[in-house]
Every structure is written in C-alpha cells, then in structure tokens.
Length: 165
Image 1 (tube, rainbow, N blue to C red):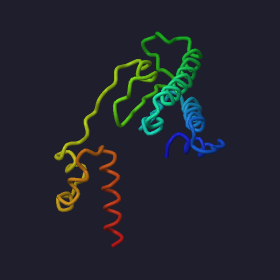
Image 2 (image 1 turned 90 degrees about the horizontal axis):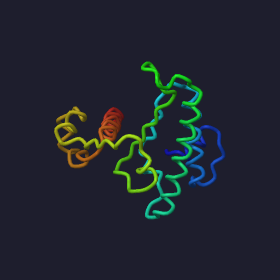
Image 3 (image 1 turned 60 degrees about the vertical axis):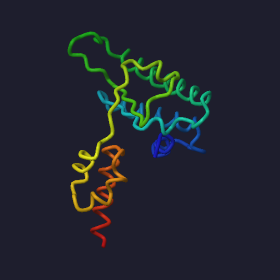
Image 4 (image 1 turned 180 degrees about the vertical axis):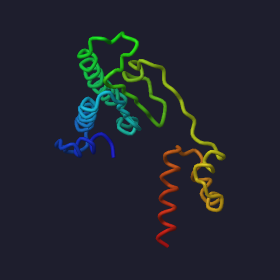
C-alpha cells in the first residue's frame, strides 16, 4: 500500500520505502496517468505518506511532491494549444485526498482550489452501508467514525467470513 509500493509494482527499484521511493511512486502514477489522458489522478490518503512528527522532513517531502506534480501538469498543458477554449479538457486533473486536514506547509499553501471537508458517516449512514441490522448492533461502536470506504470493506470481510463458517 502506498506510493513506494506503487513504484515497486511499476518495476522501479524500491529500497526502503523512503521519501525517494515514495516520490518515485508519485512519478510512476503521473506517467501512467499521462498515458491515459484525459484522466483524473487521485492521490488517496496522501497524509499516510507524510513523515510523522518531523515537520522539516514533511515540508521537504511536500515541496518535492508538489514540484513533481506541477512539472507534470505544466508539461501536459503546454502540449495543448487551446487551453482557454470552452470545450477544453485538461489532460490530467490531480485530486489529493487526506484523512485529516493538511497541516500548514508547502502543499497546503500551493493548492489551487480550497480544500473540501467531507464528514465521516454518522450512525444512520453507517447502518445503511452495513446493510444488516442484526450484525450492525455488534459492529456499531467500531464502525461509527470510519470512512464509507472502510465500512464497505469491513462489510465485505464480514460477509466473506460468514460464508466460510
């Protein structure tokens, strides 16, 4: 899971999952996206990639990541001469999602559009996603506050484990 694992899956040499390996994963994702243009590149759970409790290292990582992204976007839009036509479709749109709000730093300062905050599912929506009132009562405390994606994954795991028994 993560950018370093993606770099490895794309055939890049990954040594330790370090900052360099994560940036190589980002570069691999961009290269793949550019081949599929027009497309949306979604860098999901990007905050999982950030160094923990080391603001200078996090700032360095964010700055280098931003430079990779902006360079790729400049190249992809430079090859299109009709950027301002009403029917223009950019070759690549980059969506960055995080579980928590971005801390102040280079990435937050460089965002083109303001951040959107999506609330986690409440108990009613978690019940809807779980779609099984009998087992929801047991799982409720664990599920509330989790993302819709996490709830759906745990539901599939729960269904699979029930089938095996």
